Length: 202
Image (cartoon, rainbow, N blue to C red):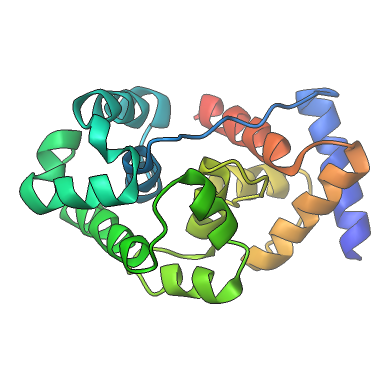
């Protein structure tokens, strides 16, 4: 089955379950501490109930962390696990490591990160962080206003239900991108609509 036929199958499933849209992409964050923590802590947690309230509180409690430089300074003197009320040493370590990479690259705000992600070498630098894979890179892009498909378990389940076989990450992302083009939808908006459908079905 060709990539186009798979995209057509997926597009039909989207229309059947989600309607014709339009699907709006979430705005993400302008607070870089929230961007980094969202990317580091979101896996395997109930986002709206568990993580989003903590990110909103972090923005209030750490107003100076709106830049990477400010967040880096906070991490040097305060315990992120306490600030996030989230007991996961691995996720805290991931947040520290992402911050270190961005600080070293002098990527200080949302616009700078948006542009920095244009370059494969920069994406590779983030991939060097333990726990950061291709999905995390695409997800970070969406958090700073790019429009990308970050393929997670909800998108994989949705695609499987549409009759799209198991594919490698890049292949399934391409099928979603083609389906978005066929339907005339924003890629990030379609991704979020499918993610929301999957997360609400759990």
